[in-house]
Image (tube, rainbow, N blue to C red):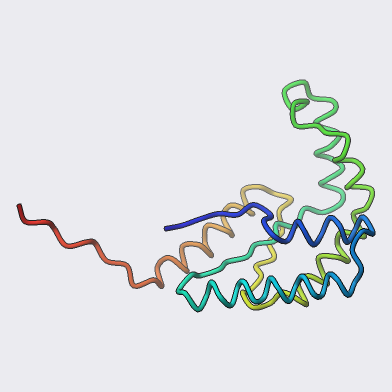
Length: 143
């Protein structure tokens, strides 16, 4: 079985920390809990792959402008997008702390300004991990 979690439990560390609702000590404690969870998952045979899709500040601003100026992209716009973009450096600092504290499972930091490159790179990593699994076709049932 393959499951994808978009942001998942890291969102609950990142946003409160950048919003100054979470201290550095609390961030470290939550990261310890995340490490415990990932250790537990891995001890049960689950492979945890973590991807940070890094969109540069310039590309982020470009995408926000496109959402405001191109009618077919307006549905994607939310005022909070610009609020978050204005805190880009704070988010990057928080991510650096999370990368340093949450390293039970390896982080794959992917440049994501170009979607084709992001997709190609993630697909390559997923393929590599899937090919390494000892997968087999199930035995045919005899009626």
